[in-house]
Structure formats: structure tokens, C-alpha cells
Image (cartoon, rainbow, N blue to C red):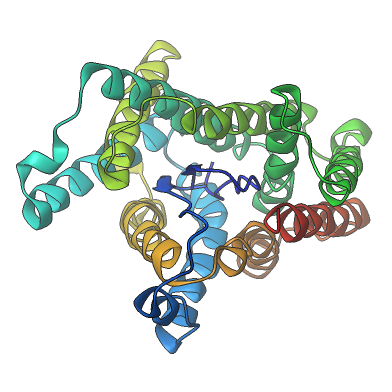
Amino acid sequence: MTSPAVDPAPEVQQTTTPEPRTTTTTTTTKPTTTATARARRITGAVWAALGIVYVVWGSTYLGIRIVVETVPPFLSGGARFVTAGLLLTGIIAWRQGPAALKVTRRQLASAVLVGLLLILGGNGLVVLAETSIPSGLAALLIAVVPAWVVVLKAVSGDRPTLGGTAGVLLGLAGLAVLTLPGLSGDVRIGGVLLVVAATLCWSVGSFSSSRLPMPANPFTASAYEMIAGGLAGLAVGLIRGEQHGFDVSEVSTRSWVALAYLVVFGSLIAFTAYAWLLQAAPISLVATYAYVNPVVAVALGALVLNETLTWPLLLGGAIVVAGVWLIVSTERRR
């Protein structure tokens, strides 16, 4: 999955990203200091970073669709995240010292579990689905993730707000409309169901990450998650036999470029921008990526790949985005 899932809960937790996730800790109720207030002002740098998150994460669906034109899904996804994870590990060791990579066994196990849910289950199934469905449809189906997170939190005893409940209902209604192309035969229903399964994996991973003993350094946690999920993706690809008949020399130039883009921009640059935004901007502003990314993905799919904008896609997408907006705007105020 490439569009990050926003967890609309107000409590202390880790915020996951449709790319690597990071951790954000809610401060206490003490008055903010002058320095904190200055850090939270919306500056030009904040808008620039937000623009990166909007455009880059929204464009990763297009990148995935281009990569799988000539590269098997799980092998490409696995290679992407192993590479990105190793690069991030090197950057952490260089900037913060090798000690920043040290974790306990429990923290490592938690990071591996979350990585399997987010990277292998969430992103891996999306990559597989995009071999048969348009990138724009995949992005809009994934946008319902915040609704699943609210449902999971409600099951655990965290009662949602009225607005959050309405947002969940809107999101699920939009999901029903978006599945119509699959039910009518316009796209493969199997691809649609794969993305729905991916949203559930991503939601469980997002929900669990705030309740497991994760590494204290969010960048370290993300690096281990990417490496674990990427290695699992490579293993699944080999088990599926994706290596048979695959010739590296036959990979198109545009697939190589798209894969490099996903590693560098989708998994490193946009992630860094997002992590910085969590410290420098109001969380309510940062959370807007959850309903902007799908719009960017649909627009790019139509412009670059000539994906058809059908009425179920437009109507269902509008309903889902409205539901996500309602969830983000109401739950973050609690």
C-alpha cells in the first residue's frame, strides 16, 4: 500500500504511512512553550513538505502500475522495500550513529509483525491487484482505511464520535459503489477483493502498531518494517514462481525508472517529509493527505495511463473522500 493510513484517534500512538510509517507521540495537556508554538506555525517549508506528501504519495499508485507492466508484483514490491529499508538503515547510522539502530528482541519482533501486515499484506496485495485493476480505483479503495481503523478502535472499546461513525458509514457506502465495476465485469473482481483485503491488513497493522512495544526511534522502526516486509515479499514471489520466465533484460526502461522513483521518492523523501511535518505542523493539517492522495492518484492515472473515469469511480471516490474528511476532521478534535 502506498497511501498512508491515518489513525484518527487522539491518544498516544504511532501514525503509519501508504509508505513507511512513523511514530508520533501526543504531548501532555500542559501549555505549549513559545518554541513549540513557533514550530507549529504554518510556514512555506510546511506547505512545501505537505506538497511533497500530497503529490509523491498520490503518485505511487501510478508508479506501481508502471512497474508491474514488466516486473512481477511481489518480486518488485519486495525489492523496493528491502532496498528502501537498507538505505534508510544506512542514513540512520550515518546521521544518528549505529546506536540508533539498537532495539530489544520484543521491539524487533513487533516491527517485523507490523512490517508483515503493512508491507507484505497491505502494499503487496495492492501491487498484485494493480496487475488487473486501474491505479485510480486501487487508490480510492485504499482510501477507506481510516474507516476500518475507527471500526477496530470501536471494537476495542474506544467509542467513536458521531462524526466518526458517520464517516465510517460514508466510507463503506463509497466502498460498495467502487466495487460495482468488479461486479459488473468492467474490471476483475479479484483485483478489487485483493485491495479490500489489503486495506484490512493495513488497518490491523496501523491499529496494532500503537499497542506493541515498537522501537523508540520511528525511523528505525520503519527501516526494520520495510526490510522484514520486503524480504517476505521476495519470499512470496519466489514461492509463487514469479522468477520463472522473468528476464531482467526484458524489464522496460519506464519500469526501472518507476521502481527507482518508488524507492527514492515514495519510500524515503516523502517519508522524511511526513516525519518532519508531524513535528512542525498541526496534525489536523498533516492528516489531510488521507483524502488528497486518492484524488492525485485518480488524476494521474487518467492523465498518464488514460484510465477511464467511470461514474462508479467518480461517485464512489467522492463518497469515500467525504467520509475520510469527516473522520479526520471530527476524530482529531477529541
